[in-house]
Image (cartoon, rainbow, N blue to C red; front, side):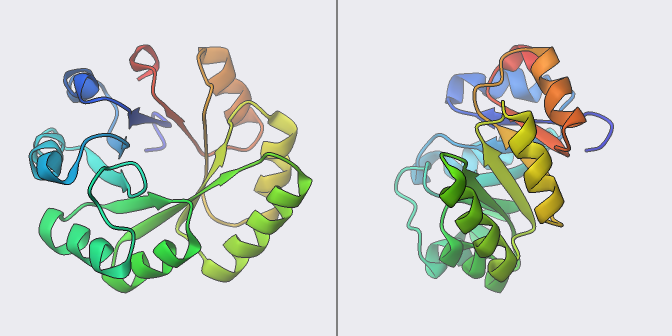
Length: 178
């Protein structure tokens, strides 16, 4: 991951051929439904991509510990992305890596997120939106997990600014930046 710190955020199935041809080795799957999940995951795996499933964005997928265990056992995904702290705990139980996604909408939201991260210990944190250098720096100082930033990133200079501000990775849905 460190040689190219961009993560593909697949927001439509039409993007799959582009990500398969990209130099990226990690994909955040944020589209599809439970009936197509196995085929999508298999295609990505065959191309040596790590697959993290956003459990709140894949249709038909429950958000309880049984759904997370099913993802681990049936699909053998590398990890999950979630906004829910109880889903982070379920991922730990299932042996999956977890990304806690947080939204920096105001100071109280950031403070709450830091407390949740401190108690739940997700493997990584994704800060949204990713266009906030000061907030990225402050979050980097407060957490020990790798920090992913994403949302609204459209230019290479925005990727550079986020990385310079302390982000470890960038998640991006724009194939031109993959």
